[in-house]
Length: 84
Length: 301
Image 1 (cartoon, one colour):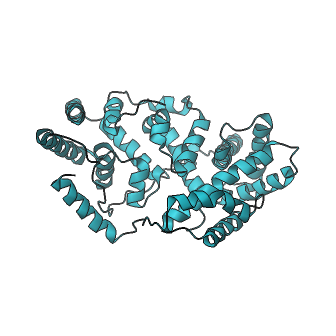
Image 2: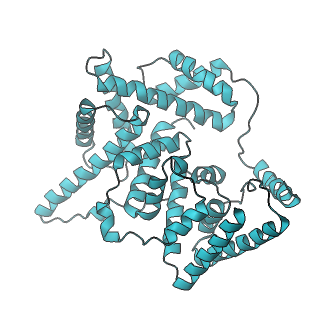
Image 3: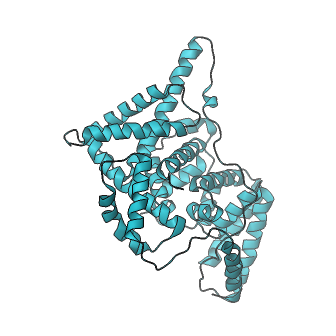
């Protein structure tokens, strides 16, 4: 498991990282199965920012993956929590 | 906890009292109520591979131990059910020698058919989408089992989405060949939530830590300056609130979502926008922000 750093320290790291150029994002090498695990565990209430810091960080930077994540989360929440 | 923290916590508790706070009780959950909730859920999903009684016998001890009630209990029950059922369905779909193999695939087919209705935008040919999704899942599961079977439902939904996008691109390519141009951007709207400006500040107080009085005052000063920077550069009050809750108070997107009555992905999306905005700050403002962060972190050590 990765060393946990505070959200503010993570922000400092991100501020010192160049934003992913828009043209590179469609081809980013992020494994979609990582997103499945991230979304599933997040729905189950697990601390995904601690468990999968690389995935969390990637979502902060990659617009396309963030869109995929939002849509998958929305679909999953609708499908798996039908009882209001 | 010092006076300031006690006062802040009391203020927050007053605000929460009028809202939908989750109440934790010591009451034992009634088994029959648990069974009823499980039955409701299975019927809603159309799942029959495992009985409600069997699920209840697996889930009930866990629920008892948590001592939840209200919406938190409802969410916990649903989570435990779908996680358990995902494993059952995955096992049945993965192994053709299982007696429930055909039943499992029929059930999965019906379930995915229902989920197609939630896709945005709606697919042009839902029947084709369903077939192709099932084919892809079949191929995948015959090759190997999932690394984490508990994620099976989310995996199915991901497959549904990617198949839908592939189909759309295929249809677009065909139509372009007929000189009707349809762009992929039509598929990709911004489905993120609208910024809600009516959120009430219900942040819990930061966890107590041992600090000297000087450190605490310095910390408070830097926090005020960081907060002012967020207010100066982030475009909406909601982004400011999320930035303060996450970066200054250390709350996770899930915790912020619970406080704000939103979904975690909505908060994470807002957080990503905050990061992008702050990354594009002028050099001077970015340097100031980095310096404040460095000081804040140092005092916190």
